[in-house]
Amino acid sequence: FLLLACLLTCPQSRSFFFYSIYCCSHLCFPKEGDHTMLPDKDGPGGGGGQAVPEGEDPSVTLFRDYLRLKTVHPEPDYDAALRFLDRIAEELELPMKKIEVFHRRVVCIMTWEGTDPSLKSILLNSHTDVVPVFQEHWKYDAFAAVKDPEGNIYARGSQDMKCVTVQYIQAIRRLKAEGRKLMRTVHLMFVPDEEVGGHKGMETFVTHPEFQKLNIGFALDEGLANPAEAFTVFYGERNPWWITIHCPGSPGHGSRFVENTAAEKLRNIINTFMDFREKEKQRLNTSECFTLGDVTTVNMTMVKGGVAYNVIPAEMDVSFDLRIPPTVNLQEFEKQIKQWCKEAGEGITYEFAQKHMNQNVTSTEDSDPWWNAFSTTCKAIDMFYLNEQVFLKGIDVYERLIPALASVPTLPDEA
Image (cartoon, rainbow, N blue to C red; front, side):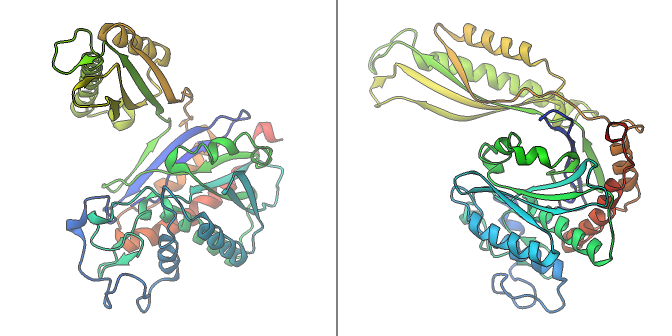
């Protein structure tokens, strides 16, 4: 279960450096197709998750309320999310800004001002949208937030990443209730459209004047579940390249052996990319030191072409999703793609739907004050827990981590 997520330092430029911190004991919330794991009842009462079991922790109740909001693509109910966040801001007695970066795409920011607001702030970021659901693979409604007698909660968005959103909220709620005063300002930010690339969310907002006003020094963001009792820290981010290869060829009738067809070129391209994919997979599987972030993943995602069964098409396209680690020379990698296209046949071209080039990595040296505050706090946390208790333990984690980060002494460039 996701407890901690990406951490990033925000230098004076607009670019982000990422840490990814993933921690979990046992996975409790299903991905698509995991319906064989699902229980038959929702706690003692059954009935799809609407009733709150007697004695349920209010934080879990809030989490399940949030899970029931259908902020699912392709038509996320962002209005419901805004109403939820309005309620939370009122409860926490925090001011909230709403910045519409695109039509009906709103970034929300709650701010807990520190005792020294001139210092760089701490950002707690999360996204409100979730990926589509294939309901036929779910035993229960994916937005019912069903909880079984063991405390396992099943819902789309339970891991990615509504759990973290509510953990942020509840940690801040506890700290405020204790009367704590933090030195650095803490911002809770909620962004739309992360699951479709963030183009109408964070990608646009980082160029907005309101983002610059946040004066961010360090932030927590999204991570992944880890099935082991450990923190996994990723201090760089793989670059996503979404590429489409255009393969032109000689058209003709389907009854002939036409030479130089688009399909032949397409086959060569597919074979080359998939051969490279297999090599990277083998590198991952044979190295004890590698994680997924150390290799380039390649996945063929779309194929397009043709007009009829008996017509040889004049062109065909194939698209790939590539995720490239920061250790790879991106310029050399693109040269390799050009060479693959040249070798596959005459006239082949390509274009990018997305091409990220930021290969910055964040310091993990003990001398780095941000990393020191983060790692020291994490090392003091016992990670042996699961399901509903995992979620609640995550609030404890943030309740300790946020004050530690917000108490980092004034840095030289802040004096």
